[in-house]
Amino acid sequence: MSALFNFQSLMTVILLLICTCAYVRSAVPSLLDRKKVGAMGIFWKCARIGERKSPYVAFGCLFMAFTILFWS
Image 1 (cartoon, rainbow, N blue to C red):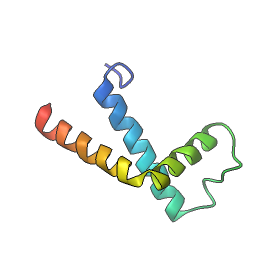
Image 2: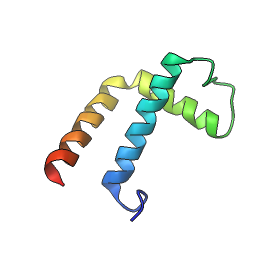
Image 3: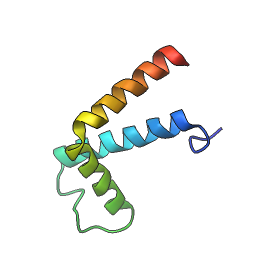
């Protein structure tokens, strides 16, 4: 079963994408430029979400970690 059909897996993939993009942007800012289009533009938007909404993203990561560890 792919991550698109399982809500828990989909949320895990989205949170990992946001966290990874935010880390890459902090390490190498020139790699994710805001003027890029296509996939790189989506990665830049994910990095911005990770930077601006970091308390909510952190809570989401903790919630997903506890869900994966203790619920499944």
